[in-house]
Image (cartoon, rainbow, N blue to C red; front, side):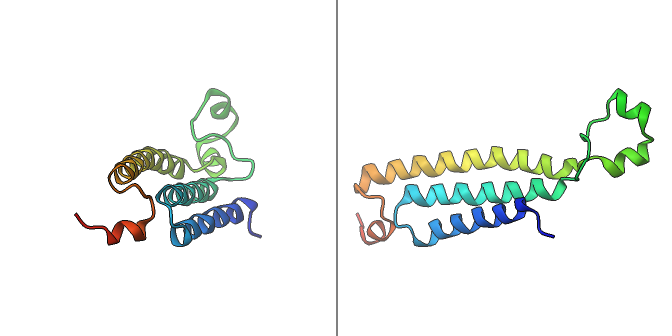
Length: 122
């Protein structure tokens, strides 16, 4: 059975692709890019989730109650969490660069419509 997290991740991804393809405003396209990455982050975190799983960090109570093999079978997968944390940092840099370029384009061309910007030459 498909989890609700996967459905929401696909919905976020679809909304972001819609914004990138059909919106004619650079700011809305940047927001669409952000929504796509949030959908991907939710998908990756959902892949590593285990129902009833514990944290990926070993602590005293888990070491006394469980053997290491049993703990590894019940722990949440930490790899998707690490990937998403790295991706969030990269995403912040990309969005900051895209927004600064949008501000520069608006100051120069007085429009945020990509089709109008393509026609302008200086």
